[in-house]
Length: 108
Image (tube, rainbow, N blue to C red; front, side, top):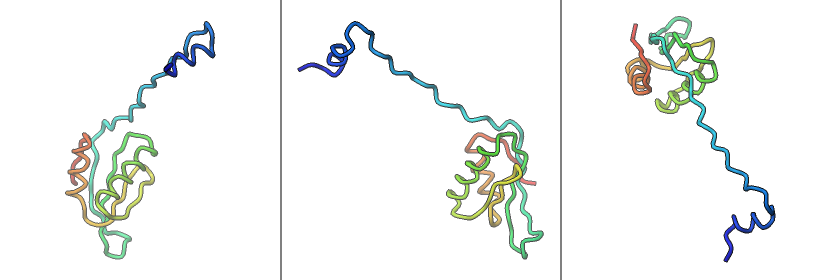
């Protein structure tokens, strides 16, 4: 039984087989600056929100990070203006998550 490569050679004749192109995985931009984590109540009807600021990565990557955090913590939130807002007082969880991701962060 002929292999698929031999069948392809028969169809192409003397032409060389096309090589499969291996593309290197796109590397995500690295967060270099230290992130600040704070809890805020202002303008939220007394409810807490954890705010992460100080990002140096593109907004698309910030949004993807926010989505992973929201899924991990089982809470709501948003990413806009170069900041991530997570509903509730989750400063300790956020700090642990960011350090596990290899980012430097502090609670202020």
